[in-house]
Length: 471
Ligand SMILES: Cc1cc2nc3c(=O)[nH]c(=O)nc-3n(C[C@H](O)[C@H](O)[C@H](O)COP(=O)(O)OP(=O)(O)OC[C@H]3O[C@@H](n4cnc5c(N)ncnc54)[C@H](O)[C@@H]3O)c2cc1C
Image (cartoon, rainbow, N blue to C red; front, side):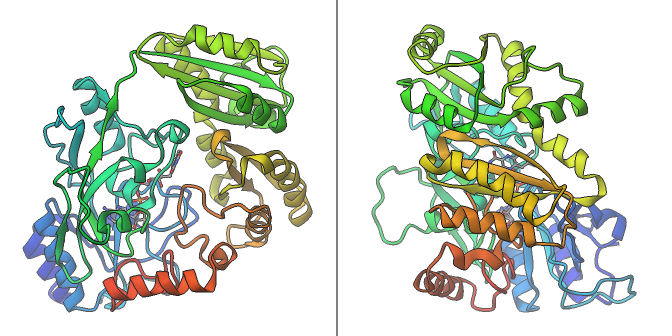
């Protein structure tokens, strides 16, 4: 039942969102309290599921009155533990609600896709709309959305704005930051700010929408976003190339003069072999290559010849497979997209260490070579599975073997990325997972500025404490 008489806050929230939308039973809350990887979990006072901006504002204001922390949650596909409660408080069955526990604010019911503004090529959507639904709506209007990622059917626009999600098309269209025209959000006291006019030119003071992009639920709760749409490409071609290694992939990409290039993904022989074991996919080529580069081009006319010409004049390639129809293209993409589930299955109950980093592209090959050796040095026998967005210098380093709470391997990998002029988070954010390493890539002055912004917008530190910045 929503809000036993013992929990006044749950009762107040039930008045706002309706009793059935306040989850207090452990089995109903369970899925909201553990992240996608299984590495991050913690207790909550209850889960609230508002359906409108007004309801979100009401819940946030009620939590503020009760000095209760809030954890915004979208599709819960985040990979740094930012959307679930922290494990820092002892949990256990108790007849009384613990007033110190946070409330999980699930935004999945804010799922309105407003009519597409074809003149401006923009759309306003609720925070709970999944990327897949947005893509479909855009497609039906003859347009497309510039960001794509494997978790498209679950990840929400609110979560993607909050993490400044990247994905496979960043090299062509940029990350979420480049798609967001404006944001509507609820601030820590329950006030609503709204920048949804869609004006491309609006130079009036600080860019509050921009501030919320990448803020990981620590500055406000995103309730709606106004997004740019792009021309829907009429034709696509996908090519999978077998190469001698990361250096060959980087060199080849540097030589390609391909205005229609939308994706350049890298993965490796050991990963493809594991994907094959997990999914039953046959190897892409009779002889494995050390590295694979997946290229995709898209445009108003068939880009196949443009890609073929560019590849002819580029460096040596072991093997090539080209696909133009959607089924064959999906077949090539499967080698890349099924890495994440393969690693999750490998880890079993152990939970993988997911270390998403970027380095300057010129250092990518060095990083890839050194990180494999480093992982073995720190944890002999660990399984390392790597893949990433080569054009962005972004590798996802997945490590299975070390205990989830043993952070020695995280420390080594993040320090190596930072030492090469890279970032400890390319696209997933800081969350809880990377907080101890923030100072590797942010100066004291920058950290102080981040804290000042947080204090200005959330003085009581009720929004996602312990995420992105120390609680
Ligand atoms: C298989 C797989 C592939 C992935 N591939 C990519 C990829 O290529 N690129 C990439 O960038 N990410 C990727 N991710 C990570 C994840 O999908 C993104 O981080 C995504 O943006 C999270 O969206 P979500 O709705 O699931 O957010 P959640 O996981 O629910 O939350 C993520 C963060 O955003 C905050 N938040 C959520 N909703 C709101 C809101 N409405 N207002 C304020 N804060 C909010 C949370 O508090 C948390 O800090 C992948 C994940 C998986 C499982």
